[in-house]
Length: 320
Image (cartoon, rainbow, N blue to C red; front, side, top):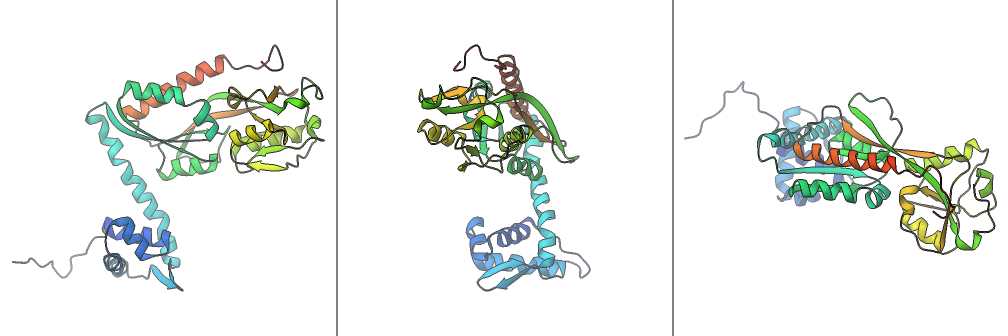
């Protein structure tokens, strides 16, 4: 026997409908959305139709071979993303009330910190909580901060001294990392022991990606010295920059963190006007700190304090 709802009963929007809408809008295809959801394409189309009927507005329209959000659909995208970000907070919120040795922490950071700073705190956090699942993603500061804002990343470790005013984001400075110059060994005797911005004016410059926070620090250093750098290459990887400098293709400014493992074909020099990038933790102000996240934050802070204590603000010899 079926129980029919009263005629004035209002149907509720379901998560299936919202997922079908969001994946279709993001992929431009109901078929791709269906594959992501593990259902058939007609099932996705039905969910979209039901959602449009409930909202009494057209959300998706076909443009050529693509299915794109209408103006009303575009207006709905951000609220839906926020809704799913809020849903992602359910699991962390209840985790402390279960086994304290389990959990999931998603960390976003730059490649340099990932390679040269994070291995130790990550290993200690894992040793402290063997069942803790750690997921690390790398990207530029803006990408990581956006991930934290949207709830896709739990905590970021980024190059940032300050962020645009955003009451939902908390920024915590953890340590400073000095920038140094690296150059091919053949140039060792041709340049002064302390390098000025003008020291680079006649040299081929290989610099970090303009979208990165580290590049902003480098550009500011050159501006103070009255120099407008014109790089011959701009790369998104400090490790790739080191390889090219070692091959004799140019010189660069990179974080001190990245100079701890370099071939003997590279010479390292301090800058006459020291400049540092600021490494900071980024979290949502409403983030629930479960046991796994608290453990990781504690280990990062401990490693950062040690890093700051041994920071080489001056070098007894130019190659240290």
